[in-house]
Length: 471
Image (cartoon, rainbow, N blue to C red; front, top):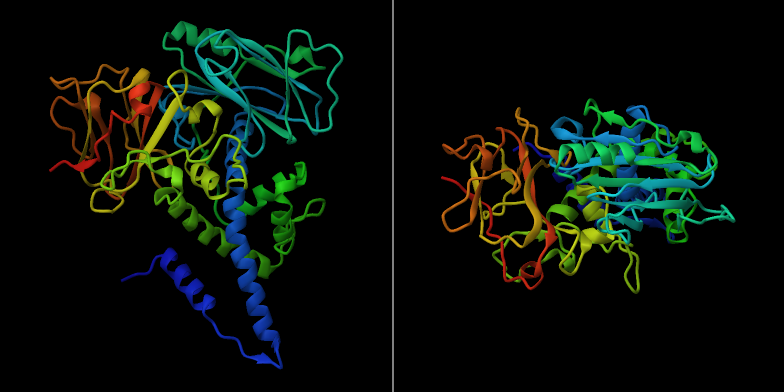
């Protein structure tokens, strides 16, 4: 049987882990020393990959914005429709994404004006840590607000009347929101009224929003040396976070050092490339076979649904900063706001994912499956089932304009009030609205989202069934 890259790398690691080195009077030989340093640096490269996942995911969206013509000065880009959101990590197909980035290294404080309306967004730092939620999930409750965002080392202006002052600890700040207006006229109004600009350049207020057409961008963390090139760009421009100093020490021996050009030698390139391969496989395992405590929602060993977003919004616990938890979520997805990890009924959302079938195998695009959704879904807004391609974690490409089944789309309902969602190459007669097509050769996973979760979700009296083969 042909070995996968994963099995080859695991075999390599097992061999090296148990290798016995002969020393020369207690000192490794030169050859043994080199082999041990190769192993040390390879192990570190894999952990650096997991550590860097959040910032490289955000960098992927920044790259998409730049590709659409935006500068990192607060200009917004709209991602809308199946084509527009096609490259985003695990997006919801129904909502619109309105995204801007801002570079404090080049500009002074930033202003973000958020209009009244049904939006849910936040200000985040370069590691996807939320600073403030806004819109219906923020303090403004969807009534609109004006933020004054201050970068590291920048002074707060003397006159801040009319602003909510926000401090960002990193050089790059992300303004991201979801436009959840259903009425098309209201959607357009909200998008037209979003604006962000440097405080000392009010002439940039009200610039036309750009639109990303979905051509040639994948936001997922890139492979090979491109991953490390993106990471070097982040390291060079960013403020050093105290929690990350040991990780920066590990990067130094791999050729990435703040204030110096990234010119890796052949040995470093080889280790970085292999480290990215193995780190990526570890990230898959860490996401799709979660072992973190928060990964379990329903206390039922036979239930395969797992909590998708397992990190705290600030990525901290009492005694440690979260590493595996944030790597799990940000391998799969983009963005982590306080409202996305809500713990009580109200505005916000909850996410569970299913990554493998009842036979403990990943889902096969050539097979037909059914998800039964019991009646009375505890959603005050809507619920959705999105199907994602496993490798890039994007909406599954299937030759149609639909990768999602959404409760707001006039679905076919069973007599008892429940719903059946069909996933696979073949659609049962009359169930087109409840069906997402998959193709032979694809692997996929799914998210079940609830917007506006109600009490039955939190007390767990409402429960999702496993996805099953539809024979």
